[in-house]
Figure (cartoon, rainbow, N blue to C red):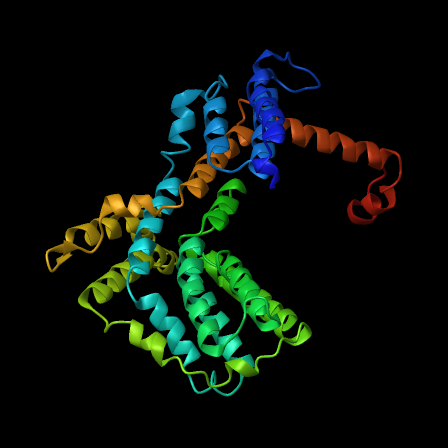
Length: 386
């Protein structure tokens, strides 16, 4: 039985963490920390324990609710910095746009194109590489959960065609490779990916989508190659069953590309272009950059969602908004909302946690210098005595 499903564990950990989230208000200031700072730190601790042991859905709501009782913040500030944050809305409507894309045949077509190239038919090793590489490419602009479900269905059919058992060495390698590749791709862009966006927000970095991708995509490619070497060169599964396999049955399942597919793809590309375009003009058309940047990253996917809902083919909309909302990964979004406002609380000047940490670290370093442990380094770089 999983820890989070253990009744005894839940009866202990949940009340304890709920108490941690609310008891800080009654603790007097000590050690340079204000009551509000103690509140925020205990809410962070309680939420972190629940995220690690119970889940990320309702514990995130508990975190937001508890932060509403921290006086310098209040519910108005907390809600505007969580559910009203442009980053939250950016992710929400990006998930909706990628859901519309997942309903088309585009994602399957990309994968089938890769595994039907001449190179893929040369050997099972090349087949495995190009199959996983197609997942990496699709993962650059698709939600990880959507991508995994779509590609897993294709992989299961490949297993049936090739007569591969999931418990075999090659079956394990491909399944693990799929999971690892989906995870790697979700860190390579900010498109429909929660954690890169959260990392940028939490670190208070002014990194645009283009700059992030110029760094993260090459890094992701290196990690992907290392993963492939470990799974298929060091682990050495037998790939002979994947040599020149007949994938005609997979092709037969996919209908001809439709108007819906084309319009959905064009709309999604428009959303991506609107994300990237402002950064291309930053160096020489400042006014245009400021106007476009002022719309925030939430504007393009909202526009894309509106277009997909308006356009109808055969009297049916390309996207039904109520259906799309049912397929949004709300647990991840709840955690996103909580971490966004938690970041605001932890760095707020009125709460004082940042100033406390800076002061504590500076005093600690000074004491170590005066003890002489790092005195020679200090004199080397600054030329002063300790």
